Image 1 (tube, rainbow, N blue to C red):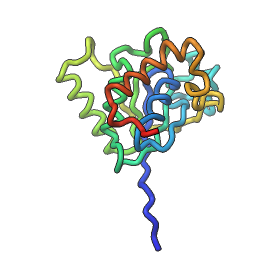
Image 2 (image 1 turned 180 degrees about the vertical axis):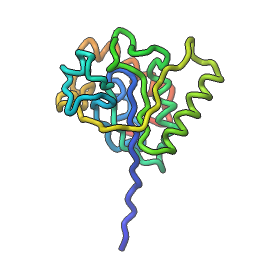
Image 3 (image 1 turned 30 degrees about the vertical axis):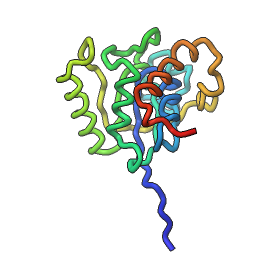
Length: 184
């Protein structure tokens, strides 16, 4: 007797601090897991301290495992472009450095194509004050971050950074994408 298991796909997105992206995507229906980590650099097994030095080439990113029957990659991109500024190279707010760049690391050719189409459409619509600088690349190796970064917002929501940076992004997601929020 065959059981019906959801088909799980993987998306990897970088849009500033991974704590923000993780907190938002953990609240999205159809998302099974979110792992904060590092991608796109030239050093094996990078550490948070090392990438913060800005010389490894890695971006802070999240690896999202999702059920495409519930939430599609296009939906993940809609959320992504709503909760971060894709027009600031190597920066999100006060977080500055290459590790905070905006990037989509496609895990399939279909994701890469859809990401390029989405960016082109957003550029045509002119909804941003400056050109979109989001990189779109095939996903290289993803390195999970140290355990203390995982589920950071839910464990440290009282900290000032979480209150002033992460919480507003989570609130924006919940407001703008109310139909996509996981039922509690």
